[in-house]
Image (tube, rainbow, N blue to C red; front, side):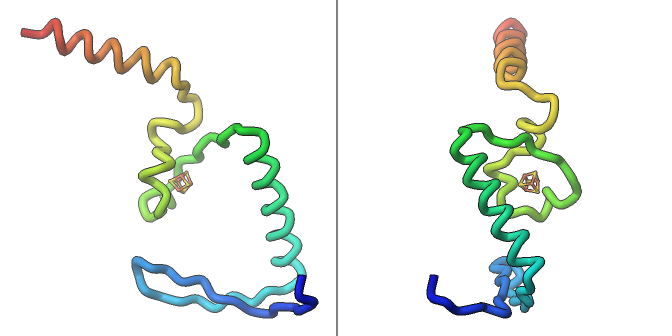
Length: 95
Ligand code: SF4
C-alpha cells in the first residue's frame, strides 16, 4: 500500500500491561494474509465457526462473547432452546 516493508511490531496485552515484540518475516506475513483471506470468506458466508473448548478459553478475552461451553462442538440452538423450555417448565411445576 505504501511500498514499505514492516519488519517488526508489538502485541500489547492490556490486562497484564505487557508488550511483546514480534518479528515479521515472510512466513508470518504469508500466514497473516492467508488468515485474513479466510476471515473475510467466513464473514461473507455468515456462518460462525464452532468453538473449540480448550484451556486457553479461561484466559481468552472473548470468552464472554464466544460462550464456548454453550455454543461448542455438538451443541445446537434447537437443543439448547428445548432444554431451556424443559427446565423452565419443570421449575414452574415444582411447588
Ligand atoms: S473462548 Fe472462544 S475464542 Fe476464546 S479461546 Fe475459547 S473457543 Fe477460542
